[in-house]
Length: 106
Image (cartoon, rainbow, N blue to C red; front, top):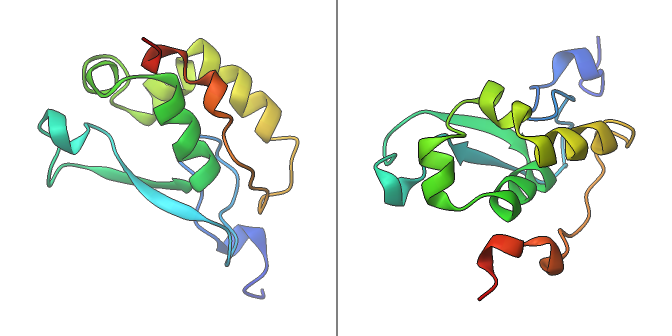
């Protein structure tokens, strides 16, 4: 198998698609560092998936309600995002629109 074979690549903890070489990616702290998660468990995911998580929930909500990959996937907004992003190529990336970050509005 080659390095470009998706079966040889790590899997995103949110969308469960392969993370191909060169695709923007990051580590997500399951409990945010500012909420006691420093040094705690992290999961690898596409940067677009990581951005969507932080556009969806506050750090307090992430620490209290959405602190496992399974819980994140059960979030209604993230479930819709996952269904949408799974239709895109594994190396797909785009900006997360700022207007969708409703919890940050004053």
